[in-house]
Image (cartoon, rainbow, N blue to C red; front, side, top):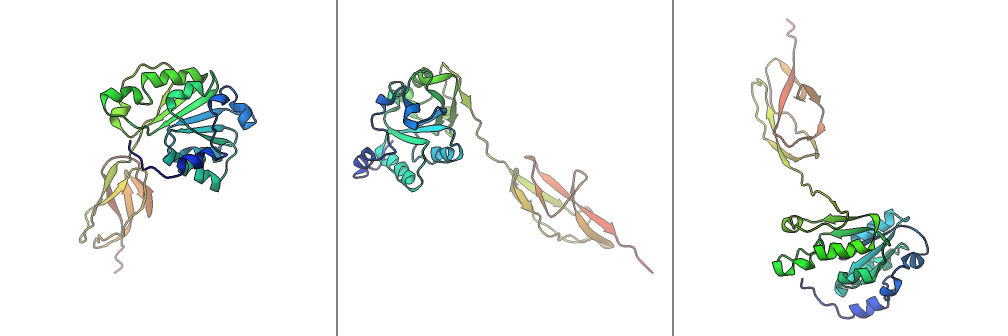
Length: 253
Protein backbone atom coordinates (compact mmCIF):
# COMPACT_ATOMS: atom_id res chain seq x y z
CA UNK A 1 0.00 0.00 0.00
CA UNK A 2 1.46 3.34 -1.03
CA UNK A 3 0.30 6.31 1.03
CA UNK A 4 1.06 10.00 0.76
CA UNK A 5 3.33 11.21 3.54
CA UNK A 6 1.97 14.17 5.49
CA UNK A 7 4.62 16.43 6.99
CA UNK A 8 4.29 16.72 10.76
CA UNK A 9 1.86 13.79 11.12
CA UNK A 10 4.15 11.84 13.45
CA UNK A 11 4.64 14.79 15.78
CA UNK A 12 0.94 15.61 15.80
CA UNK A 13 0.07 12.03 16.75
CA UNK A 14 2.75 11.84 19.44
CA UNK A 15 1.21 14.88 21.15
CA UNK A 16 -2.42 13.77 20.90
CA UNK A 17 -4.30 12.84 24.07
CA UNK A 18 -6.37 10.41 22.03
CA UNK A 19 -3.40 8.26 20.99
CA UNK A 20 -1.94 5.85 23.54
CA UNK A 21 1.83 6.18 23.26
CA UNK A 22 2.98 3.49 25.73
CA UNK A 23 0.52 0.92 24.43
CA UNK A 24 2.61 -2.08 25.48
CA UNK A 25 2.68 -0.68 29.00
CA UNK A 26 -1.14 -0.86 29.00
CA UNK A 27 -1.18 -4.63 28.53
CA UNK A 28 -3.61 -6.03 31.07
CA UNK A 29 -4.54 -2.53 32.25
CA UNK A 30 -6.91 -1.17 29.61
CA UNK A 31 -9.80 -1.04 32.08
CA UNK A 32 -7.74 1.32 34.21
CA UNK A 33 -7.07 3.57 31.23
CA UNK A 34 -10.79 3.89 30.50
CA UNK A 35 -11.70 4.00 34.18
CA UNK A 36 -14.39 1.30 34.01
CA UNK A 37 -15.00 -2.44 33.54
CA UNK A 38 -16.82 -2.19 30.23
CA UNK A 39 -16.13 -4.71 27.43
CA UNK A 40 -13.25 -3.90 25.09
CA UNK A 41 -13.62 -4.02 21.30
CA UNK A 42 -10.76 -3.28 18.92
CA UNK A 43 -10.46 -2.65 15.19
CA UNK A 44 -7.26 -3.71 13.45
CA UNK A 45 -6.46 -1.48 10.48
CA UNK A 46 -9.08 1.14 11.31
CA UNK A 47 -8.17 3.62 8.56
CA UNK A 48 -9.57 7.09 9.25
CA UNK A 49 -11.69 5.83 12.15
CA UNK A 50 -15.21 6.51 10.89
CA UNK A 51 -16.48 3.02 11.76
CA UNK A 52 -15.20 3.04 15.35
CA UNK A 53 -16.30 6.62 16.01
CA UNK A 54 -19.83 5.79 14.98
CA UNK A 55 -19.83 2.66 17.17
CA UNK A 56 -18.35 4.47 20.15
CA UNK A 57 -20.97 7.21 19.91
CA UNK A 58 -23.78 4.63 19.76
CA UNK A 59 -22.38 2.38 22.51
CA UNK A 60 -21.01 4.39 25.45
CA UNK A 61 -21.10 1.18 27.54
CA UNK A 62 -18.31 -0.36 25.39
CA UNK A 63 -14.65 0.70 25.22
CA UNK A 64 -13.00 0.84 21.79
CA UNK A 65 -9.39 0.88 20.61
CA UNK A 66 -8.49 1.54 16.99
CA UNK A 67 -5.19 0.26 15.61
CA UNK A 68 -3.60 1.88 12.57
CA UNK A 69 -0.02 1.57 11.33
CA UNK A 70 0.17 4.59 9.03
CA UNK A 71 0.57 8.06 10.53
CA UNK A 72 -0.91 9.88 7.54
CA UNK A 73 -4.13 7.87 7.94
CA UNK A 74 -4.30 7.97 11.73
CA UNK A 75 -3.87 11.74 11.63
CA UNK A 76 -7.30 12.10 10.03
CA UNK A 77 -8.89 10.01 12.77
CA UNK A 78 -7.25 12.13 15.47
CA UNK A 79 -8.48 15.33 13.85
CA UNK A 80 -12.03 13.97 13.74
CA UNK A 81 -11.81 13.03 17.41
CA UNK A 82 -10.77 16.56 18.27
CA UNK A 83 -13.98 17.80 16.66
CA UNK A 84 -16.16 15.24 18.47
CA UNK A 85 -14.32 13.78 21.50
CA UNK A 86 -15.37 10.35 22.78
CA UNK A 87 -14.33 9.13 26.22
CA UNK A 88 -14.69 5.46 25.28
CA UNK A 89 -12.38 5.49 22.25
CA UNK A 90 -8.59 5.60 21.96
CA UNK A 91 -6.13 5.02 19.12
CA UNK A 92 -2.82 3.20 18.76
CA UNK A 93 -0.23 3.64 16.03
CA UNK A 94 1.44 0.26 15.70
CA UNK A 95 2.02 -2.81 13.58
CA UNK A 96 -0.73 -5.36 14.21
CA UNK A 97 1.91 -8.05 14.67
CA UNK A 98 2.53 -6.52 18.12
CA UNK A 99 -1.04 -7.09 19.23
CA UNK A 100 -0.26 -9.91 21.68
CA UNK A 101 2.29 -7.61 23.37
CA UNK A 102 -0.35 -4.89 23.72
CA UNK A 103 -3.37 -6.77 25.09
CA UNK A 104 -3.40 -9.49 27.72
CA UNK A 105 -5.09 -12.89 27.59
CA UNK A 106 -8.90 -12.57 27.86
CA UNK A 107 -8.70 -8.77 27.71
CA UNK A 108 -10.51 -8.24 24.38
CA UNK A 109 -14.14 -9.15 23.74
CA UNK A 110 -14.36 -8.48 20.02
CA UNK A 111 -12.08 -7.77 17.06
CA UNK A 112 -13.17 -5.99 13.88
CA UNK A 113 -11.42 -6.59 10.56
CA UNK A 114 -13.04 -4.23 8.08
CA UNK A 115 -12.00 -4.26 4.42
CA UNK A 116 -8.40 -5.12 5.21
CA UNK A 117 -5.57 -4.98 2.67
CA UNK A 118 -5.93 -8.26 0.69
CA UNK A 119 -2.18 -8.60 0.03
CA UNK A 120 -2.87 -10.48 -3.25
CA UNK A 121 0.60 -11.95 -3.83
CA UNK A 122 1.09 -15.45 -2.43
CA UNK A 123 4.38 -14.53 -0.77
CA UNK A 124 2.49 -11.95 1.30
CA UNK A 125 -0.19 -14.38 2.52
CA UNK A 126 0.97 -14.22 6.13
CA UNK A 127 0.36 -10.46 6.13
CA UNK A 128 -3.36 -10.94 5.57
CA UNK A 129 -5.28 -10.27 8.77
CA UNK A 130 -7.38 -13.47 8.51
CA UNK A 131 -4.20 -15.52 8.04
CA UNK A 132 -3.27 -18.40 10.33
CA UNK A 133 -0.50 -16.29 11.88
CA UNK A 134 -2.78 -13.39 12.78
CA UNK A 135 -5.63 -15.58 14.00
CA UNK A 136 -3.20 -17.22 16.41
CA UNK A 137 -2.29 -13.78 17.77
CA UNK A 138 -5.96 -12.81 18.09
CA UNK A 139 -6.66 -16.04 19.93
CA UNK A 140 -4.16 -15.00 22.61
CA UNK A 141 -6.09 -11.86 23.57
CA UNK A 142 -9.76 -12.76 23.04
CA UNK A 143 -11.99 -13.87 25.89
CA UNK A 144 -13.36 -17.40 25.70
CA UNK A 145 -16.62 -16.33 24.04
CA UNK A 146 -15.03 -13.50 22.06
CA UNK A 147 -15.40 -13.24 18.31
CA UNK A 148 -13.91 -11.70 15.20
CA UNK A 149 -16.10 -9.75 12.79
CA UNK A 150 -14.58 -9.91 9.32
CA UNK A 151 -15.84 -7.88 6.34
CA UNK A 152 -14.36 -7.67 2.86
CA UNK A 153 -15.39 -6.84 -0.69
CA UNK A 154 -12.42 -8.77 -2.08
CA UNK A 155 -13.46 -12.24 -3.24
CA UNK A 156 -9.94 -13.67 -3.13
CA UNK A 157 -9.51 -12.59 0.47
CA UNK A 158 -12.95 -13.91 1.35
CA UNK A 159 -12.08 -17.29 -0.18
CA UNK A 160 -8.67 -17.31 1.47
CA UNK A 161 -8.29 -20.69 3.18
CA UNK A 162 -6.79 -20.75 6.64
CA UNK A 163 -6.81 -22.92 9.72
CA UNK A 164 -9.32 -21.52 12.23
CA UNK A 165 -7.95 -21.42 15.77
CA UNK A 166 -10.69 -19.37 17.42
CA UNK A 167 -14.35 -18.43 16.95
CA UNK A 168 -14.89 -15.99 14.10
CA UNK A 169 -17.98 -14.43 12.54
CA UNK A 170 -18.15 -14.05 8.77
CA UNK A 171 -20.81 -11.68 7.46
CA UNK A 172 -22.25 -12.09 3.98
CA UNK A 173 -22.00 -9.06 1.73
CA UNK A 174 -25.24 -8.50 -0.21
CA UNK A 175 -25.89 -6.31 -3.23
CA UNK A 176 -29.47 -5.58 -4.26
CA UNK A 177 -30.57 -7.08 -7.57
CA UNK A 178 -31.90 -4.90 -10.38
CA UNK A 179 -35.44 -5.91 -11.27
CA UNK A 180 -37.56 -5.09 -14.31
CA UNK A 181 -41.17 -3.97 -13.96
CA UNK A 182 -43.34 -4.66 -17.01
CA UNK A 183 -46.77 -3.06 -17.36
CA UNK A 184 -49.46 -5.15 -19.09
CA UNK A 185 -52.43 -3.30 -20.56
CA UNK A 186 -54.66 -6.31 -19.89
CA UNK A 187 -56.71 -5.95 -23.06
CA UNK A 188 -56.35 -2.18 -23.34
CA UNK A 189 -57.53 -0.48 -26.53
CA UNK A 190 -54.72 2.07 -26.83
CA UNK A 191 -51.57 3.18 -25.03
CA UNK A 192 -48.08 1.97 -24.31
CA UNK A 193 -45.85 2.07 -21.22
CA UNK A 194 -42.11 1.68 -20.88
CA UNK A 195 -40.60 -0.82 -18.47
CA UNK A 196 -39.21 0.45 -15.17
CA UNK A 197 -36.18 -0.86 -13.26
CA UNK A 198 -35.82 -0.90 -9.47
CA UNK A 199 -33.56 -2.44 -6.86
CA UNK A 200 -34.83 -5.16 -4.54
CA UNK A 201 -36.42 -3.58 -1.41
CA UNK A 202 -36.44 -0.18 -3.09
CA UNK A 203 -39.65 1.81 -2.59
CA UNK A 204 -40.71 3.37 -5.89
CA UNK A 205 -43.66 5.42 -7.12
CA UNK A 206 -45.52 3.88 -10.02
CA UNK A 207 -45.77 6.00 -13.18
CA UNK A 208 -49.10 7.33 -14.44
CA UNK A 209 -51.14 4.86 -16.44
CA UNK A 210 -51.02 5.50 -20.20
CA UNK A 211 -53.31 2.65 -21.24
CA UNK A 212 -56.96 3.19 -22.20
CA UNK A 213 -59.76 0.73 -22.75
CA UNK A 214 -63.04 1.77 -24.29
CA UNK A 215 -65.91 1.38 -21.86
CA UNK A 216 -63.61 1.01 -18.83
CA UNK A 217 -62.11 3.27 -16.16
CA UNK A 218 -58.59 2.65 -14.83
CA UNK A 219 -58.63 1.69 -11.16
CA UNK A 220 -55.05 0.64 -10.47
CA UNK A 221 -52.46 -2.11 -10.88
CA UNK A 222 -52.46 -5.53 -9.35
CA UNK A 223 -49.78 -8.17 -8.79
CA UNK A 224 -50.54 -11.74 -7.75
CA UNK A 225 -54.18 -10.81 -7.27
CA UNK A 226 -53.24 -8.07 -4.81
CA UNK A 227 -54.13 -4.46 -5.53
CA UNK A 228 -51.24 -1.99 -5.49
CA UNK A 229 -51.45 1.68 -4.57
CA UNK A 230 -49.20 4.46 -5.82
CA UNK A 231 -46.02 2.99 -4.30
CA UNK A 232 -44.75 -0.44 -3.37
CA UNK A 233 -41.69 -2.37 -2.24
CA UNK A 234 -40.14 -4.67 -4.80
CA UNK A 235 -39.76 -7.79 -2.70
CA UNK A 236 -38.07 -10.32 -4.95
CA UNK A 237 -35.48 -10.52 -7.69
CA UNK A 238 -37.90 -11.35 -10.48
CA UNK A 239 -39.51 -9.66 -13.45
CA UNK A 240 -42.81 -8.28 -12.16
CA UNK A 241 -45.74 -7.93 -14.54
CA UNK A 242 -48.41 -5.48 -13.42
CA UNK A 243 -51.83 -6.17 -14.85
CA UNK A 244 -54.22 -3.31 -15.49
CA UNK A 245 -57.26 -3.45 -13.20
CA UNK A 246 -60.23 -1.74 -14.81
CA UNK A 247 -63.86 -1.14 -14.00
CA UNK A 248 -66.74 -1.28 -16.47
CA UNK A 249 -68.60 1.96 -17.14
CA UNK A 250 -72.32 1.37 -17.15
CA UNK A 251 -73.85 2.68 -20.37
CA UNK A 252 -76.98 4.57 -19.48
CA UNK A 253 -79.27 4.97 -22.45
